[in-house]
Image (cartoon, rainbow, N blue to C red; front, side):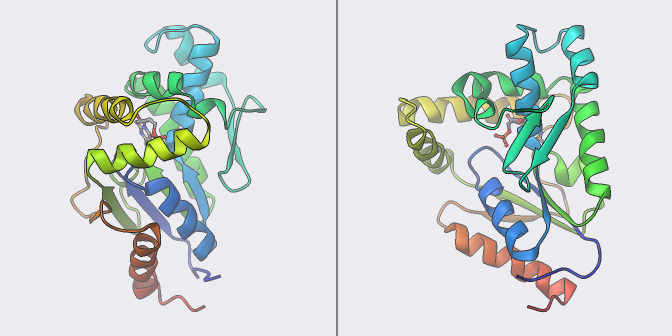
Length: 227
Ligand code: DC
């Protein structure tokens, strides 16, 4: 495993299915970094809303978000909401449909961003999401924006859902991803966009290994990492 010498912050943004979670996890393992899945935090808040039957923009939900505890275990593989493991619940179709509405509420974003910045201050980190390169860590040492065609992204998400025995068609997944892209890119607060200084990677025809190798090469080049 390569280890990075000084504290380093790597931020990755991109739309759903662009490969950023898988890639960030792999780079975290390779370089010995803390992995932060920021989308999982918005998903956990969405679980909170569903469980308590609260509208995304309800004042009650904002209060609950301020009071709740979201923690990661197992280097980001497990997410705990008020000490309960919600790692499976956050990936359900109900959460997929609702999460973009919850994530567009400024007060909710404010709380989650503060939490992410506290985690980032603790040490070297690779964090991925929609606003990590622009809002959460604007001074990150390395910034990447991953993208892929909507059909390719839908195929990847379909394979993940089928592995969980979710019965859904490619067309339905593509429609859901397109709807979420639209909401993430057009919302008033922290819309998804590539930071001006981010390296853009189109992953449509690339394997995970190729993207991981490219990113680790960029970091190693600048950091002078040794194996
Ligand atoms: O990366 P993901 O699919 O798990 O993200 C779920 C939703 O959360 C996505 O629709 C947008 C939102 N999100 C966000 O607004 N900001 C982030 N930093 C990460 C995710």
